[in-house]
Image 1 (cartoon, rainbow, N blue to C red):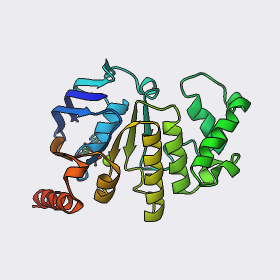
Image 2: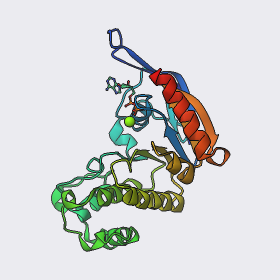
Image 3: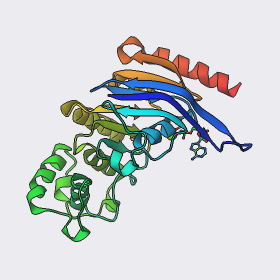
Length: 254
Ligand SMILES: Nc1ncnc2c1ncn2[C@@H]1O[C@H](COP(=O)(O)OP(=O)(O)O)[C@@H](O)[C@H]1O
Ligand SMILES: [Mg+2]
């Protein structure tokens, strides 16, 4: 589904601050699977998602989605095939618009429209049905501005908006990290429901090892832009993964 071929990415090239992050990095992400990327801070997880989503440039290499080279495609164009939910609950939504306006925006992201005519009457029932499926009562707050929602409600809405057009690929960047444990579990359950129901290929970044094993099919550990572990989640236990993680961190601290 997604192939990253010989990716090279440096920051601040030819300065004292030069960071060689990815040097001939390769990754193959299988269709309909949820792949979780774990790794310590600064190992390149977010940059990798930015590169796939198109908000970060690459120095060389190729990003191939469904057999098509999208390396040169602008972020807005890639958004037609790639959905994303960020760590910050306000990033995936338009806080000053209402819930129903946000739903309409997600539904029409590939078409031109004026804000005045954003909400189409004929789509409202479909959007209400999608909101009802979340079981958060958001369907009763259609005209509430999204800035008044809790972090968990915003993330649930973000998730719905990112998956509404059944993207080829969904990118989740620590999308539950800002939430309390109960809300985090709820959002993970909704995530699983949506990606399984619509067979959406997903790449998730998480610091939560338990979630990585429970909710994904494959676990990849990154360290300084390199893959140092790549396993089916059924082939590794939480305990083993934590031990590897801690050994790696000790090595970094030492
Ligand atoms: N825009 C940028 N300019 C310079 N350095 C950056 C930029 N974005 C990320 N980096 C550097 O790249 C490395 C990886 O960052 P990041 O992908 O955010 O890591 P992670 O998400 O794994 O914590 C870090 O050393 C970070 O400082
Ligand atoms: Mg990050």
